[in-house]
Length: 391
Image (cartoon, rainbow, N blue to C red; front, side, top):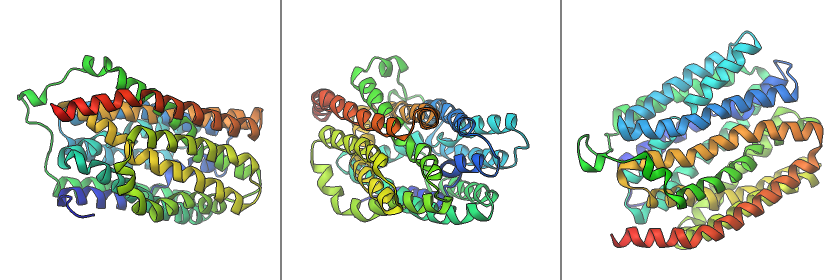
């Protein structure tokens, strides 16, 4: 943990505070099918609408972070997310639920490219895998707490989840405005310029985005297909919360032990192994019947997530010109938004109409495809990183 700036640790602390109450998205499908008495397909559609908003959110957030500044993009996204979460929690009918979900999706991830660009601005290239890994570690430390607490609160009333999530979003935004300086290149300088055409013509980056989309579609089953499958199997929300909390527990316990080691290995190969493990882990869900067995599958895909999440943002930060770091990270984030759009509806539809075996087998196949793609694009990534290092 040594050698990183105090401003990085402010971002890290704000992220941890916010993630300890990240309740709305993980429990949204259970809120809709439980308190709101919606069908599986309707619930999946609402979550997918929020995912569609996320598809737009991160490219817009990246543009705003590069054009108007990292701080205000982050803080504005957090404040807007808080308002949208409360609107969703108090929506009186299904039409307003869809509208609030769309608004939440647009605002929820607006801050992410700003955070990723800030880290790239504040941290030297050699330390970025460690910095992104520590940020990811904070996210999952908070997430492990949130899933257990959220499962208990959900059984006492889902509105508690909406209020707690909104308040921590506000806290994160205010903390950054008070304690972190602006890091983007100064307006009017050559470093502040950058063309979106350059990004769209970057074939290496576009290949990484496509592979990330496949990965994100599989990973979205953690908050869509998995809770629905466990509900069908007779488990209550608290059971799902405890099961998915294993994700955060594994990451919090394992990642500090392997972070420096993973950073020294070839980033593309490590990412390929991680995406394969995520696909296989979700594929094993079809064999689970008891709570410990579901928890064991979470352990498998959590190990894959450690490898993938630690290095993907670092790879993109290395490939991106300084003046376009927000937009490059926003493009990567668009893949996560695409997975959040496709995954929940597809997972709910397949689960309801074809059964769990088809859903989880499909996840395993997608993991193999993503891993193979990472190995194929790896040489191009290594050449680009070597060229930038010599420049």
